[in-house]
Image 1 (tube, helix red, strand yellow):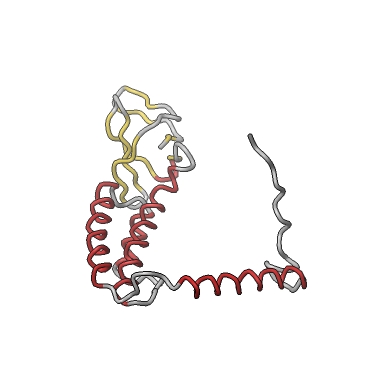
Image 2 (cartoon, rainbow, N blue to C red; image 1 turned 45 degrees about the horizontal axis):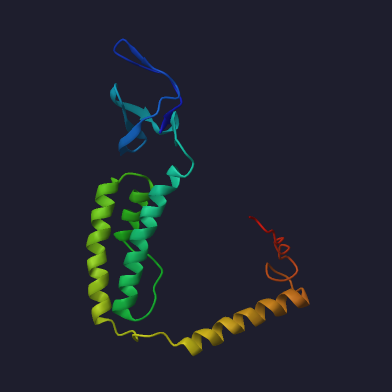
Length: 171
């Protein structure tokens, strides 16, 4: 994280723009470890992500946990269920908000992966997909998309569709 304000610690000034590592999040308070200074507490609005992509990491960790849970339920039940229920829902929001340490999320995902493997071993789902059925569905989808585009019907795949992207050769 990068600080957006100056902070005085003892007789030392920690200037705006100082880079630190988030070590704890509690509500709106964020503890940031700054090398050579120690742990400083900031309000969430007094910090910005060092790189834009870093703000997405917590969301990616939550998404990984959600995918493992969804796959496990699918294997055990035989049908996909994409609605996330409590207590997993609250846990995912806590992960997204950055309230759960990376090490804890990784340990949780590892434990869930064992459950996923166990569910795969006892799953009632067929061992191989019905490729012909999948191909038929994909062809029907493609034909419907083409029909909507050619007839220019209302909607995002017809009249309101964006233009096709320009093909560019990059070497």
